[in-house]
Image (cartoon, rainbow, N blue to C red; front, side, top):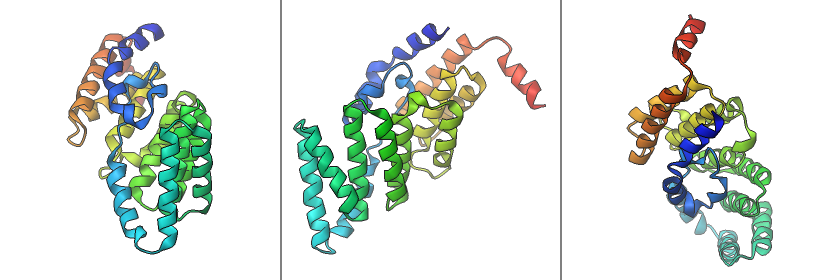
Length: 236
């Protein structure tokens, strides 16, 4: 059953890999990655607005901006140790906004180096330092995504439930990740509930809605007969 479930998920691997490519999460797309829509580029606009306000306040912000750009250039050039050192210094000494971004870049480097546990920790630190809700929620979401393989469904829900509110920017992404965690553990009714909501959500992407429908079809084909009825009786 597990092998069949993994094979079904891999059917849409290429599509989700393309969505996540610029976020450097290819290495996280293993058995359960295809139902994880981690494209969260909205952070660019939110942080750019915040930093646009911060920049004019003085030389500290200007130097932080230069340091951040230098770290990014080192990262893109493949000099990961130099980039990691630059971002670590900025995270410790820089103003709050740039420190948060530096922690997130450090997490991306950790993922590049195959250290998902360190990445998850850095994302959690970024969430605690974040100057605004958008950045905080993205850091929390990425933290769960980085540590996904080591988190149970209950752990995933504990971390992501606050992101599933009606006005949360990453609500659909968080719910899709929760659905993947539920399906991984064959918690069919929890998975069905998440994907049913996603299939009807107006704030999700068309691709996400389609993936939700495909997940629901997979659940209907593979969940043991009577699962829904048994759950209804236990709730009564």
